[in-house]
Structures are given as C-alpha cells and as structure tokens.
Length: 111
Image 1 (cartoon, rainbow, N blue to C red):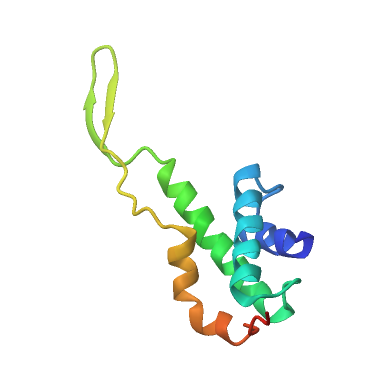
Image 2: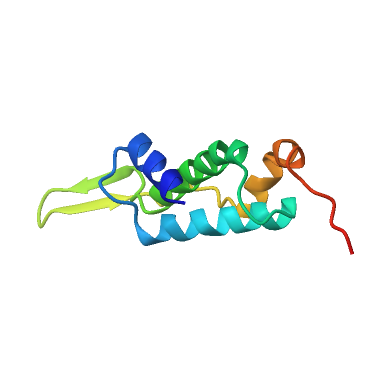
C-alpha cells in the first residue's frame, strides 16, 4: 500500500494523504482482492487502485466545496453560495467500470 500511497501523493502533489483517502484506498484494495479471489494485489492492478483513489479524492474535494458565489451584500458583508453540485459515486459503482480489467486477474474459487 505504501507504494500506491506515494504514487497518489506524487500525482496530487500532497505532503501527506488524509485518513479518509487512506481508508478508501484500503477498502478499494480489499474489494478488488475479494472480487478477484486473490490474497495479494497483483502488480497489474496497482494503476487501477491509484486511478480509483484519484477519482475518490476528486469526489471528496468537490463535496467539501462551497459552490458558486450567487450574491454579495455590502453593508455588514454577506456572501451567499449555491449548494455544490456533486454526484455521489460509490466504490462499487467505480469498480463496475473496471470490471473488464479486474476479470483478467480473477481466479475461479475452488471448494
């Protein structure tokens, strides 16, 4: 995971990843491992995890924004913002988009 975290940090030019993004990264890896019936993340899926973490970071950033400035009042200074428009993206929904790539690494479960 440290390699993945460093790569995401470098791409986003962050000094440190926040706990939320680290948790989302761990959850992403676990869901991929469960789907693929693997014990360890194959090297070929690391770029997928990085890309998903970038998508989740973008969603987190947009969700914490204030929206667009819609009015300003001069006396006693008042600013009004519209509600930010965000589309809630679930991890399962994102993984669905990568199903073809994940299937290449999927193992058949034996009983």
